[in-house]
Image (cartoon, rainbow, N blue to C red):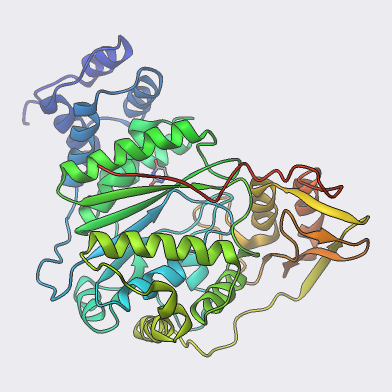
Length: 432
Ligand code: URA
């Protein structure tokens, strides 16, 4: 039996007492946790100590690199194109990856998007794309390379081989109240993105009621830590701070979000979805060395749509197939004339989730047709009886709980009342 160089209890005590862990200690701890030598309850105590006492910049970097080293690392250097990717910290109605990946790839760069499934009120990109008949999330590394050379973009499941220590630790944090912690979030996200092997990365860091860090200053700090981690690991990284107080776009769900994304790729779609897609595309292209790209033009002239069709077809999907439609729907109307002054992201996300669009446990299926379509956004004038939003599901027993989640979440005021969106959609950019 090999002798272990450290005792994890000593390391937990160090962090509990606000000490600093060395590189060797962090590397050993993550390796020993991945091997199963350090037990879940010990790692849970460590996560709570980090949550309460924080980590130094060096510690966060070493934690991130140790999690990268716990698994395989993809290498796209053999591709004929530069790679650039995006990660969002998650929000309600956030379907931006769907129009963004083909839009950016249509300028001749490669977009390898390794994504996850949704858990809780923010949907997962793979769940959304799986509403397209035939579309497969699992792509081998060889097929990923081929698709990046041909279509230019691939959105697929991140295999369990990438940063497996993060997979274990994230599941543990989820059940121990240690998710909302900047060093742990930053190392978790960045370990996966560094292992994915992209040369450039744009982070969409959300703040507001529908984001998991509600306060903009905390989101800015998270963005700064992640940008530094990326740059330290040789990934050109930039972050955009974006407002998640109000749902993004008009669709919240899976199939309906695909529909909205296709509208954007056809040159239409809601203004906020278009604005964020264009902003993120510009940053991704700039980091990949493509300057002055006519990003809006590529949405209008079919260039991005052609790439979308190629990307969906390459993974077995039929871009022309009819998307699933729910058997039941329930329309909520305005009870009086006025102006819609408030529409809170979190309750709408929870309601869509309760309708079946999201899952409560990892193994639950999702109802691809379930969700909410908004017919008005904050600032819109409404008249009594006008539809405000439509809820859809295949299980009508779910309407009641969804409506409970929405109680008090939207408000009709008088013309001239303040519109409560919590500021502009794009609140700033964080660069190295
Ligand atoms: N997403 C991740 O991948 N990790 C976190 O810690 C939080 C969000």
